[in-house]
Structure formats: C-alpha cells, structure tokens
Amino acid sequence: MGAEASGSGPALRELLREAETSLLECKVCFERFGHRQQRRPRNLSCGHVVCLACVAALAHPRTLALECPFCRRACRGCDTSDCLPVLHLLELLGSALRSGPAAPRAAPAAPGILTCQHAFGGWGTLVNPTGLALCPKSGRVVVVHDGKRRVKVFDSGGGCAHQFGEKGDAAQDLQYPLDVTVTNDCHVVVTDAGDRSLKVFDFFGQIKLVLGGHFRLPWGVETTPQNGVLVTDAEAGSLHLLEVDFPEGILRRTERLQAHLRRPRGVAVSWLTGAIAVLEHPLGPGACSSTTVKVFSATMQLIGQVDSFGLSLFFPSKITASAVAFDHQGNVVVADTSSPAVLCLGKPEEFPVLKPIITHGLSHPVALTFTKESSLLVLDSAAHSVKVYKFDWG
Image (cartoon, rainbow, N blue to C red):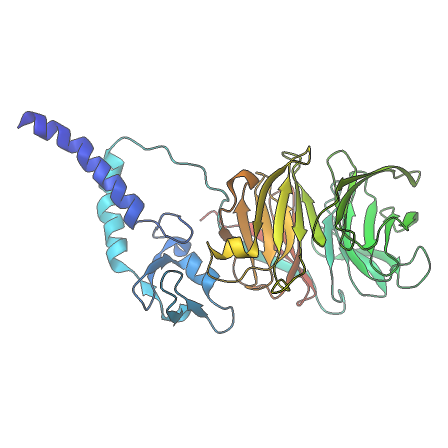
C-alpha cells in the first residue's frame, strides 16, 4: 500500500498536467485559458470552446458573424457565453498544479493583445496614405500620401512638424509615392510609381538623389542596420540592395539580392538577426487576393515561407497580408486587410505560429512599424490616420 501511495502522487500530477494541456488551452491559439478578459473560455453555439481573444479575431468587425473553426457552424460573437465548467476546472486544478514541481514554460511568441492608445492624422491631414516610417534618431513619424505635399512628418505626439515633396512632374517632385523609409542618418527615401524612380531627400525636404531608369516598378523600401536601402521591384520580380552616400547624394553600389520573386511589394528587415521578409502578391487564377510571406537569412537563404492557403489551414478566416514587419524579438508581424487585423506569425523557422495581436479598430491597414519602446504604429488608409498600439500585459 505504501508503494502504491507513494507512486500515486507523481501519477496524479501527470494526469493533472495532461488535463491542463487537453482541456485548459484554446485549440485555436494554443494559449492557456484564464480568468482575465482575453483568455476567458467562451462557448460557441455549437458547443466548442475557444478563448475570447480568438472569438474577437474570428468575428466580422461589423456583423460579428463567425464560423466555428472546428465544425464550421455559424454563430455570432455576441451570442457566446462564458464556459463555466472550464472556469471551475481552472479553479479546482490551480491549487493542485501549484502543489507539484513547477514545470518549465516556453516563452510566448508575443507578449499579448495590443490596445490602441491614440491616433493622429485624419482626413485632410492625410489623404489615402500608403507608406509609413520612423526616424531612428528623433522618433518622428514620416508618412507618404496623396496630399499636395506628399511627405508628411509628425512629431512623437502626432502633431504635424513639417511637410515636403510637391505634387508634380519635375524630377524632384513626387507623383504617386508608394512607400518610405528613413535612413540611420535621417534621410528620407521614397518609391515613386509615377516616374518609377527612387527619390532621396534630407529630413528637411531638400532633394539629394533621384534614381530613375533603375527599376520597372519600385514598391517597398526599407533601411538595413548598415544604412543600406532595400527596394522591391514589383514588375521585375526582384529585390535590390543599394549603397548610397546620402550626404553627397551619390549611388555607390547596387546588388540584386533576389531575381525570381512574384510581384514583391512590402519588405522588412530584422535588426536582431538581419533576416529579410518580402511580401509577394502572385498573379494567376484565384490569386487576386493571395499573398505569400518569404523570409531570407542575412545571407539570402530562404528560412521561412507561408502563403494565404497555408495560413487558412490554421486560421478559418481568409488572410490577405498587406504589410510586413519584424518585432524586437525577431517575430514576423503582418497586417491583414481581410479581417482587418494584425497577426504575429512567429519566428521564420517556426512558421506558422499564428497569433492575432490586433483584432479591433482597423479598417484597411497598409503599413506597420515598431518603435524603440515596442509600441506598434499602424497606417490605416481607410481612416487616413496612424494608430498607435501598445501591448496589454494584463
């Protein structure tokens, strides 16, 4: 009897841990249920249980309609209710699980849900904005849009500091700006679809360099940690690295890093690992809203890839990625115009680890960038504004 009793303790703890894994985690995001708001277990009308954060991510932002990710039965987010048996089980098992040896827990891929702190811009201040960047030294926010002066610079509080880039046909003017980046020495680089060029300004708006004739359709642009400039060419299907003497306005060197991409647009670089993410928009039957995220190492080896179809196997809603960025932990983050939402895909070698981090308050997100303080700026073109999100550590 003594041997049986002594062996029952570890067996019970193992059984409790299995119960925790099988019963106490959401089978959509694989986060553990809890009593705090985003992790509360909710009953769908079909009887399946998911956490409140996933209910919010799955529900249509206006109609609140959603499909169960397991049986596809339709219901509404407002018709869900707390799953009391799971909440009671959490309470009952909590003390028993704490009494055993602590089990190691993996660090989460992202801290949690982001909440909107404030927004700036708005119609008239911004008109159909398309690109967003941060000045690494001053923290000022740079946006390109369809206004009379097409580069707008905001201070860290959202007030308009200055603007430049006249609308026009001259070489130094901007016709149809698509994307923008700010270099480490505070030069502003803009891709212009109007004359298919790359244009470099100092931070006060003086033109320094115009690169015409180098690209068929320059689209995405990003600064590397070494102060190079990455440019995607959507029509040529290529990714380029440019080395520029910005104060002198001289192009020193160009290198084609990739030559067989499918309509690449957005581009991002991880300052933690040097990895480069490219967002493709391939053509073909049924591909009008399909997107692919490809991530290359600093030496341009493909280390991660996922497309809309692959994501649909893990997430019941259609995902159309419109922008890509890296957070400070090296996770890939994309904006989704179908939901609309912002999603963390995890690290490239772990693709896909899908986790919604913004599920409300967006209309048509087209650009993303993280601040040094880990806030996330989202450019919402339908709202003509920049929205500032911070993590809710709850």
